[in-house]
Amino acid sequence: MKVIDLHTHTTPASGCSRLRPEDLIKRAKQLGLDGVCLTEHHASWDTYSIRQLALRYDFTLFRGVEITTREGDVLVYGPHTFGLPYEIQGIISAQRLQEMVVLRGGATVAAHPLRGCFLSRDGQESAEFHQKVRELSSRPVFRWVDGIEGLNGNTSNIQNQGALTICELLGLPATGGSDAHLVSDVGRYVTCFEQDITNDRELAHAIRQGTFKAIALEAWHRGVSSSA
Ligand SMILES: [Zn+2]
Ligand SMILES: [Zn+2]
Image (cartoon, rainbow, N blue to C red):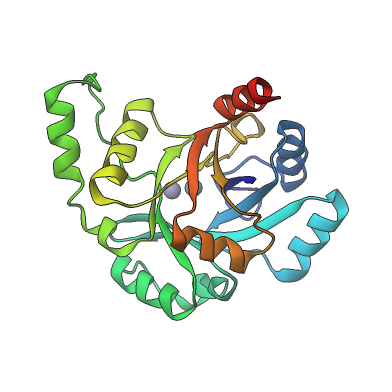
């Protein structure tokens, strides 16, 4: 089983992040993660730099990218997708992005899909919440992705609960990622894969297959200590 944080941003590659790659890796190792995926905004790590970093810290690193589409942010995974940020001009549609990713054998995940929703204190158990989530599940972005980020570390609990419910309604798998921009964010939510994932090709394949679960790291640690 592999526990991976599938959504992280580092400085200077992502302008909004204050997290240095070295600090991300040190924190991820401390937390007991098996790997981390660097998903910068519209930028991919080059092969040489990421290998050097992985070797220096003896830690498994994956590469992804976060692309802003007309319908929302989409995380892209897969070894042949690293050139996409340089190929894409302007803001494209999620459908066009999915077409480009499919051609390259990659995988897509709708990032923090309900960020900005449920800003009032609607109860998670209320009928209004469920009705609203059903309406939101028809958003076009969900038609053009392999999975949905059900647990995002920079999103409120109710927004994550809504995203997880949409995964169930649409039969799409839920990923977990911290969306870390600070060292304290790292690993808040992670994705637990059924199989070993050792490279970007296997990661994209597993995401398309849906062989994983989104989980809060705390819950995983509790599970590990109770089964030990
Ligand atoms: Zn985003
Ligand atoms: Zn992000």
